[in-house]
Length: 284
Image (tube, rainbow, N blue to C red; front, side, top):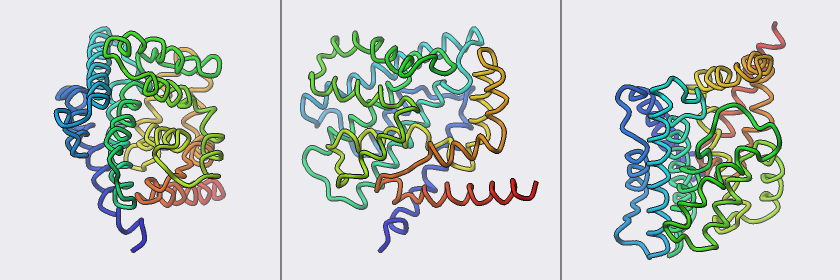
């Protein structure tokens, strides 16, 4: 049976989960720790039953989620939480990664080490925009490097393995949009494996922009990002709302190379939007 048909229910589940997050945001928000716990539950990851190394990684993820939640609450009280890079974006990224991993499970047999790799993927999403100030990088990797440096104390506190710390740092650094195209191109040259750092990074990049690709959530997220940019770069903020900018995003950022994304049918979702946009632009 084709992978897209195997995973057909997962896309609907993802869309429903994203909708539920928006119904809760912000007045009935459960908190990022709760969102993270529910992702673990959906993947049947039991913190009490995993190896010590994985338990440290999960503990670190929880602490990161708690820090992001408390910081977001503090900023929200002052009306200063970024419009796009908010707690809602981290939640979107976590549930998107969860559904990508579920899609992978439908296509690949799982080995003994897969729980740690899945925990790593969720940990990266929890921390990838840690303490993001809003806006866009003034130079390549600016905010990504800031996140890594801010996460170091938590890494030391939990006692993360050096190899896990290196993976977290590299994947977070490669969430810079400038790295997306080259990462996908490099990964496509090799067989898929979640143990392959390039392929893990592809999954991270896909989860990062998945909600911004889906028709149900893309408009509100694009508008949120435009509001976030308005103060520092009003010209770019206005351009972001134009159809041509949406086309650029779909063609050059929403690449969806992984078997997980293919199983969810994300390339087809993207391609339909591209066709509709071209038809609209041609008729304008």
